[in-house]
Length: 285
Image (tube, rainbow, N blue to C red):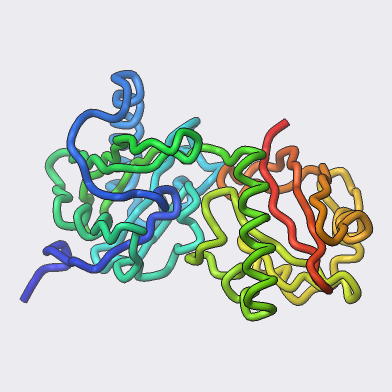
């Protein structure tokens, strides 16, 4: 009978590495980044060794192990994601072994197979940089601690205005071609319309109801007439008022970034399609 850490060829979609084509060899981190990552891994592993699952809150976003450009996540021997300080936090509590990356790479299966308690281990993979369109090599560092694997990963890049506009255009086209059935895909965190800090949301132009939201499902089905941003601006009302058919309009406000978990300035592009207002934004000044 295989052990919990034997080879498992089922695939995992790592939220931070959605475009990962294949595992690869070669250095990825700069030397200084490697040193930071290994130091973070050593500290995280030591804390988990002492406290076990009681240490998990420290690995969440905003916790003691939330560092610029790096984050920690914890896997159970059974493939359940126990904690994450990055975008994969949406899978906490789930068995993630059945998920797939876009190229079918067995990322989590490989991590679980290679993890060892006696020393840190590294895994290189190929990832498509959204900004350049080029494949790049990146690295995760990990080690087994008891029946868990502690992993340190690089944080993903931010989306750009160009990417957000393109994302919106694709969503508009999908809605025009497939009708309201596409809303289920807008709501699917594993779907084609959610990637890192890029996601689609849709507000009813007449009922002011949030019909889709790629990162905050709690908003779906709610009337957002009085939805406010961090500066208490009625952003839902403003988007619907300004949205036009066949034209992209900009709105600006402050909103929670699902990757950094910080409230940040956001520019959102909106366009009306029939009775729905579709919106996609990017974060940053």
